[in-house]
Amino acid sequence: MIRIATVDDASQLELLNNEFNGQGNTSINCIRDSLLNNKQEVIIVSQEKDSLAGFVCVQLKKSFCYDDFMPEFTEVYVRPEYRKQGIASAMISYAEMYCNEHYAVHKYELLTGKENTTAQSVYNKLGYEDDNELHLSKRVERRRNFLEDA
Image (cartoon, rainbow, N blue to C red; front, top):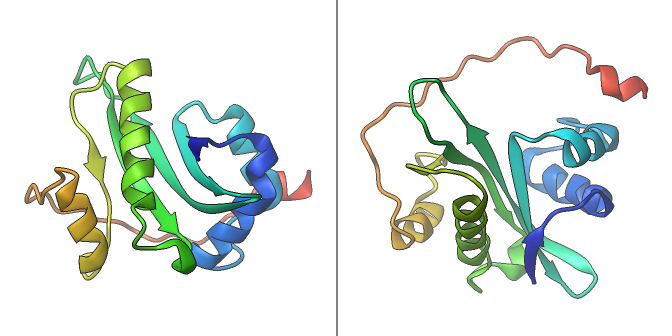
């Protein structure tokens, strides 16, 4: 079942995020807080029986330059044992449907690794294509999160 994540999913999302992004990138408290209070992100999950098979994070980008939102898919993860079953595609399609129903949208963006050709194939089938934009990032020293003490 594909659905919007709730705060009750926090512990399973922490496990999935640790598998995907490595341990120590966030805490259970930060995940709970984000699920409860972050109105700039939509998190979609795939639930298989009593556990989560994957998640998709959509950042709701908004600029004064445009009337509409430009949602960006920043994280797409499906556990290895659930891959090649259409779960990533289903979560992305659900996220698009949700955003179209709740926000004025003019464009979707999707962030993925340059070498991740398997994922790129999935995204291409959903209509995403290379727009010849270059994504740049800058790493900074990690600052202690105030929620870790909560």
